[in-house]
Image (cartoon, rainbow, N blue to C red; front, top):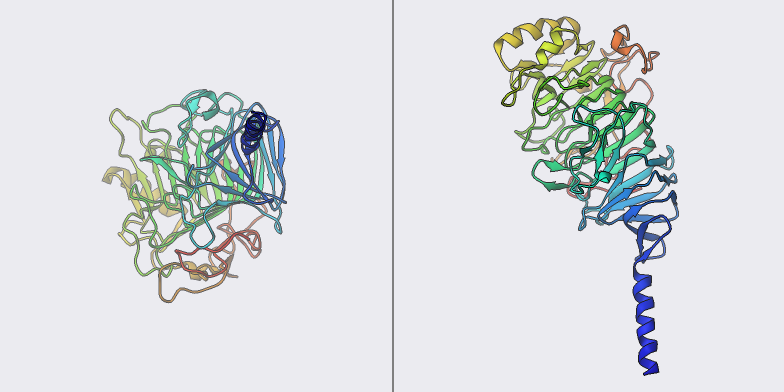
Length: 477
């Protein structure tokens, strides 16, 4: 009997050790090895994740209760594929993920290197208290949790969700159900007190970046080989973004249609406020045309698709290699009454001082939903932008397609260089005279696109440096 009681007690101790509740509220399971820590449940007290460990996200991990999650430079966090691991920073909580050029913070797949692919895990979601045009407590796309911790919105446009700097998010963007996917990095009503700088989303299974409302400003964003859209703005996002790069694979696009920019005011296309009015400057958008791919996925669409009453603005940027260039889509859902081309003619949306190259595969460098709208927007766009159907990325960028482009017998190996060619059309001519650029932008730069002579993506970003084929992406650095 005593032996049985002893065995029983030992069994209880083993069970308790197998899944213990930490002081920060997250469930920490026994590591597969001494350097691996599994995290699940809620993090309810401020905690630090150390670069000496590898953290595995099991299911949705919510940082709640106004806690701050600090992640040291050089830390690796893996999203578990089986449980669709994701990290969600809820309203009032913060993330302090500050890497360096030499020690970026890396979120990646739990699948072994060489077998990773887009959509292996959830992604990173920031939820804030800034305004959107849907309400003050709105469910975020991609999260099934119906409680408050899965919602975003409020009235504080200066809200602070923390800092992310020198962070890579790889192989994220898992689909929970049709049209309900987590992106690489999702912003829900994130405020301008938040710092987002030097971020790469690599091979997301949905959008690379999507903003649902909010006023957060971002800079130095990289989107490589996304499945759906690269920069998606919705529900009243009013932030400012400068210096961004997107590069696509010729074979990878979403059945819903893949674009460099996609922008809506809301799903209804109505006049809900605040109106989506994001301002982008110095963006480099490299589509699939001319990338070296043997064929181009038919689901590729536009360098920029502006629809459903959006008033997005784009300046000093380069869009090259899309099947179609700039599309003002005035097709509206049932009951919709407003259109995006009207925002352009009224000056609420401005597309100016950009280079749109080699984006004419369907003879639509400029496209609109109907002839009337096309007649309005074409003069506005052609007078303020440069369209060249024949010019390629190679004419303005040093070596944009050097890395293994994917699934082509002659794929080149190495690391691309997106700096501008001296004396090219992108090397000078940036203008910051428009009122929309009055504040929040670095006006000292003279180049168009994301890079001048300095390669700010060097060292910390991932461009498949091992030169492996598309199906065997390289290991985490």
